[in-house]
Image 1 (cartoon, rainbow, N blue to C red):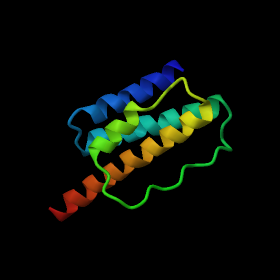
Image 2 (cartoon, rainbow, N blue to C red):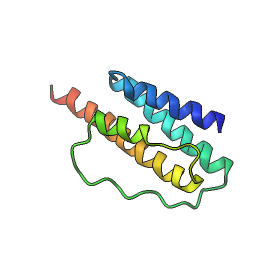
Image 3 (cartoon, helix red, strand yellow):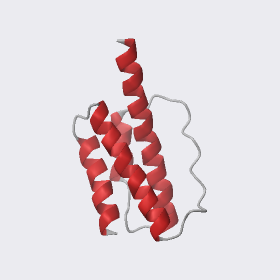
Length: 104
């Protein structure tokens, strides 16, 4: 789980700071890579993806909170679910940066 821990740590560090759009993209990539690593290493490909988050304002505080709650020692399927949820929040934040940059 060293690689997984490293990837989640990178995402946490990025989101904990004052991230710009590019930084948030790197956090998203780290989470996506962590998900792929977990799925392929433990053959969890058949795991069901989490439901999409309800359309609501997603902010950086929520992303920080979700990343802080990730337990790398938890059940692998739960960890996969949690990582996917965090990835979706970070992806929504990246998209919101896109919207802000095109409307300003």
